[in-house]
Each structure stands twice: as C-alpha cells, then as structure tokens.
Image 1 (cartoon, rainbow over the protein chains, first blue to last red):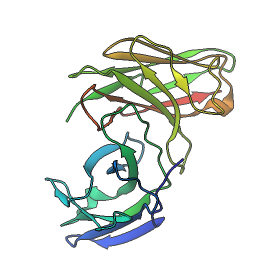
Image 2 (cartoon, each protein chain N blue to C red; image 1 turned 45 degrees about the vertical axis):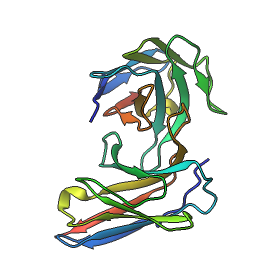
Image 3 (cartoon, chains in turn orange, red; image 1 turned 90 degrees about the vertical axis):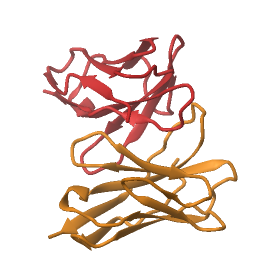
Image 4 (cartoon, chains in turn purple, blue; image 1 turned 120 degrees about the vertical axis):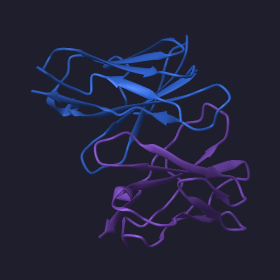
Length: 111
Length: 115
C-alpha cells in the first residue's frame, strides 16, 4: 500500500518554480523518498530520491523536512514538457522491495 | 539513465487468446523486474515481482495462472496474459533494477486491447 499522500492536481505558470508537496508521516528511519513522473501514455521516469538531506540534480531539487514526515519536489523553471503526473514513493534502498504508487499529483504547466 | 524496452508497444488480440509482452534491460543486468498494470486515469498497480531464475511473487488478487511471468535471464522478463478477456485491456508497464541500485527504471509500456 502507498504510504504517501499528495494533492491530486496543481497548476504552475511556465518559467516559474513548481513546488510539489508530499506527506509521508509513517516513513521509517531507513526508508528513502523517491520521485517519479509519468507523462501521458509513457512509462514513469525517475527524477530524484533522498533519505534525509536535501538533494539536487539536473532535473529537480528535493527538500525533506527535518522530521522526514514530508517532502517537496521543486522544478525550478517549469516548462510545458513538465506537464505530467508526479508520484512520491517511500521505499527501502537497495532491496528488492517494491514501489507502491499512490495517486500522484497531476501538474499542468500553463503557458 | 538505464534503458528498459518493451515489446510490443501496442497489441490487439481476440478474447480467449494469449499474448506475450517482453521487457528487456538494454544496458544493465536486471536482477529484479516488476510488472504493473494501469487503467485509464488511474495509478500504477503492482502485479508481481520477479527475480532472475526464480518464480515470480504475485501481489494479492493477481492470478498467477492468468498472468504468467518468466524471468529467465538478467536482461529479459516476459508477461503472458493467458485466455485474455476484454477486462484485461490495460496499459502494462515493466520496470527493472540492478543488484546494487535502488532506482527502478521503467519501460515505455504496452497497450493491450482485447476485443
């Protein structure tokens, strides 16, 4: 079962930062937070993951609260191609453990 | 990132027939592969987990005799939908992970339509 909750939808103006929140209040100490996105009729695409420190890569930044009960994915300059469903998943690292997808957030970037 | 392919991308079959979907990891060895299905406007639902060389582990409610999974090599897993019915029409997606990695890499999906 998914252990995360996300708002069902969000809009963001093109060129602005998109901040996508995720609650994972029951996360355990050794579970990581993963973010994926799915553009319509495609397979999910890996974005970023983290344990407790903030992380940044070429796609996005991940901010995890100190108590680890929530996180925010930041797309610094949203483009129309960022319109997708964004999934936040918690999971143990480096195991065969499965990803259980929640309902995600449908982000629409508006021109 | 790592590349996972699926074949075919789309398939239409008649009710009662079987259809096989292939999932390949193109540039890494996938010790574990996962199969998901996704209905329109819904999230991905995990069907089963397969480890190379061993039997797949199915999620509760997924019929193992209907959805046959084979993971005979480190780069290939197959899902066979047996005796397909219209309600099996869905988007089937596989993912793969290597032994040392935490991320799963997803294939592009296969759209199955049963008529």
